[in-house]
Amino acid sequence: MNWWVSNSSFCIWGEFIESLAEHNPELVCEWDYGRNTVGVMIKRPENVAWNSDEIVGWTCTKCFHRWEDSIKNRTKKGKGCPKCKKK
Image 1: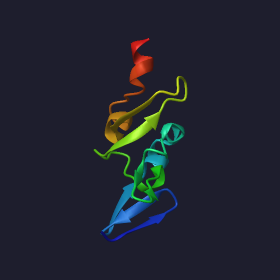
Image 2: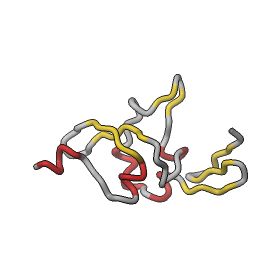
Image 3: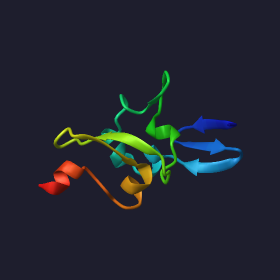
Image 4: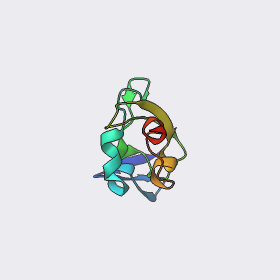
């Protein structure tokens, strides 16, 4: 894949894509860096599209529950921590 990253947005094959960090900065603090790895590479909110279907790890800042959900569910559908939702 031919891509480059600049600030908080990136380009894949000439198409500009807004990153999660740029579009939804409030979600960056819930990004689970420990679970979002590919081999030795750590996925970062600056390097994923804000509307991606990719499933990644999250950690709730209120109850510290860890779960997986798609980026799109968090950004477009507004889903949050499933444990806090049950309370």
